Length: 328
Image 1 (tube, rainbow, N blue to C red):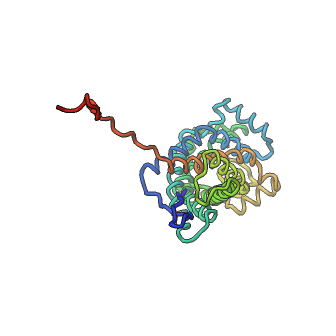
Image 2 (image 1 turned 90 degrees about the vertical axis):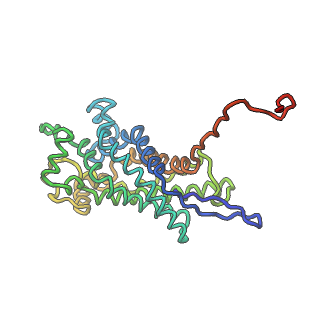
Image 3 (image 1 turned 90 degrees about the horizontal axis):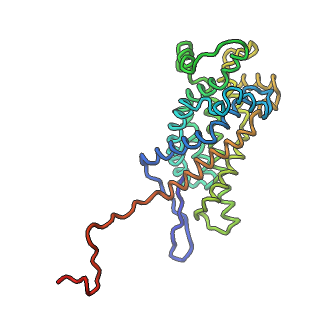
């Protein structure tokens, strides 16, 4: 999210001046606000659909929608929103925009291309948000969504906070952060791809429209570039399916007792083959596009065009230079 502006050169040519965004509390609020907006609108319904399909890998898209609807109608699509998704969104958005912006700036200042700087910024921001804020929230969201597997087997599921405390008492911090390494791999590949591919798409749009390097894009062009980056970044869907399985509250004797990324991959492949590793990719494409539009396109537009305060309104009568208003 580094602002690059074209500075006028003496010969009339243009060169790119790299600008480092100042560290402001308002930038952290911007990241948190954008992520809260993303998850509360389309984000959580797509997240629930994706997670349900990844957990119930024999379900098709239509059957997964029916399963979610049966859990409470429209509210079923917002399961896990409060408090876990809101806690996660309000913290990870701030971490992502701040860390990614700093990492992208330093990468560009050391000579990285716009595409390379975007990847480095996204990877660094993704890892930071995974380990700093996302581990326990992602775990609890998945528990909330997948605990209906227990109900289907005749076991009465506990409430959200009973589940949280039960995991904490039994397994401590490690249990609450179960699957955090898979989350970190997902986030670094997610945002590395989203930022990098979005920057590459932005440059392609500049080439197609005859804009110079670093020249600002219109809002529609920014959104289009982010949609391309978000859609193509779902190549890592197997990592997401592995993450869901590691955090799922499923009682299956064939599952590994101590799940790692490696043995979880093997378990899913043995159970469902290659298709199982890509289950839920359709809603995740929609989620990837929406998240990237919110965090990359809207983040760029808001940070590059901050609201300007109105000039103060003068008090008292305004005297003009007309003859009738001259002081005597």
